[in-house]
Amino acid sequence: MTIRDVPLRPVGREEFPRFNKHVCPPTFGGGPLDPVTPTRRIASNLLVNIDLDVPGLGKVPMWILEDPEDQQGGRVFPSKTIRTVEGDIVHARVGAKSNTHTIHWHGIEPSPMNDGVGKHSFEISGNFTYQFATNQAGTFIYHCHKNTALHFEMGLYGAFIVDLKKPDTAEAAGTPDPPYPPGGPGFVRGFNPPTHVIHYDVEALWVPDDIDTRWHELGHNASMQKCDPDDPTAARNFTGDGILNDFRQDVFVLTGEAKRPDDDTPFQKAAVHARVGQTILVRFIDAAYSVQEIRVGLPLTLVSVDGFTLGVGPTGQYNRPIEFAAGQPIRITAAMRGDAIIRPTRPGRFPVTIDFLHWISGKKLYTATTFIDITE
Ligand SMILES: [Cu+2]
Image 1 (cartoon, rainbow, N blue to C red):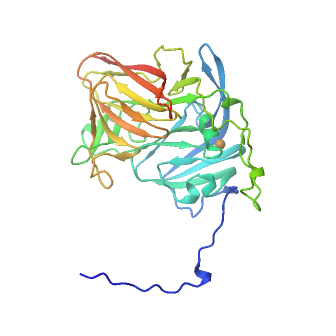
Image 2 (cartoon, protein in one colour):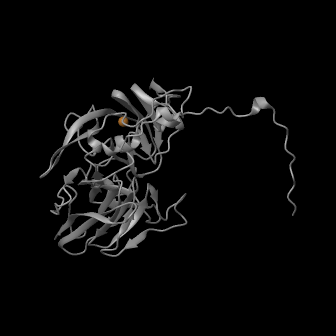
Image 3 (spheres, rainbow, N blue to C red):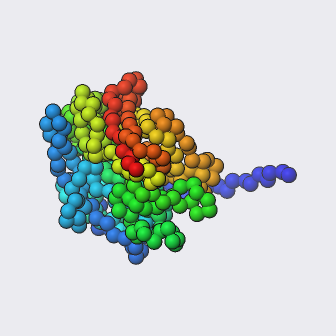
């Protein structure tokens, strides 16, 4: 067989793509763009100021996203978990209550104008309705993508869970319809032929985070360049006295519960309580800037990484779920997610440790401990 050489057609100047250097994101409101009828509507406002209580240290100012339609629990840290269902077309009404922000739906992969990466599209001034489809079940994260290193650090993030449709089986009859309730029960995508559906009784959410309290004194646009569209890369547009290149964590957080570096008491909020014979689903999301190693005192199966199901097509047919022995570390870095299945066979209190490691030196900075309590 020979490969035919196709001669290139001369291309006129008018067909060249236009080059626009895009340094200062424009602001925009309104939306949705190219709307279609949604199957689910959600709402989120940013930002809301809260204080994070650190025992023995005091209060650390945080910024969170709130659900304005939630009468009970719309103001929490991490920001309220969003849940949609596989196949949903979502309209997400987002209000920037002060200054400009975005929401990036990390891993959902919407179209560029709905992706919420400000420098690729625009920042929201006022209100904007993002439109996207959640076609892949899994664990994702949403966060503000303006002055990102700072706004993410300040707490402008939350879990985004895409639930499976409820299977049409007798076993499923006792489970509520999706979106499934926080804490379980529900169904998750995992290698389990032929349907690749796994039922879980108890759902846990582990979100490690670390805080440099010096950063929490900074203003909204700290160290951002001044926007001069006529000369966007001029040196004078950049501040040279910032600290956003220098992260020194002095508070450690697990799922919104904070501790000083010398406080080794167990974290209670992330603790898991289940019975022998039940199936536990642990969703973990790395919201820290250090590297973590998670060690669980029970064997587990990692069924999904970054919203991709291991061993299941269309993207996962060339890998397989990963078995971890008790105590074998799972190493994660910023914004990584995973879904792990644990099936306890005997009662007891099983330790969970999360080591926070410096991202350059690898030095261990802190060990967070929590536990899994299994009763008969
Ligand atoms: Cu923001």
